[in-house]
Length: 82
Image (cartoon, rainbow, N blue to C red):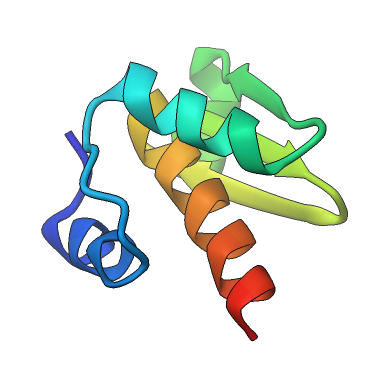
């Protein structure tokens, strides 16, 4: 699951998916490349996140893979709609 606010922001761009697979597929349809890393326990404690998505020159920290995909997707959608 992704946070409700993030879900609302995606819905404003027409994305209603909230599960990991659908968010990943939506992100892959809109970007050429990204890297998702599941952090080991010590960096997860240090950075207070469990997943890190790297895309272009940005890094998105999240508690779940679905949230990481949603953050990356929102960034792509925000950039293309501006």
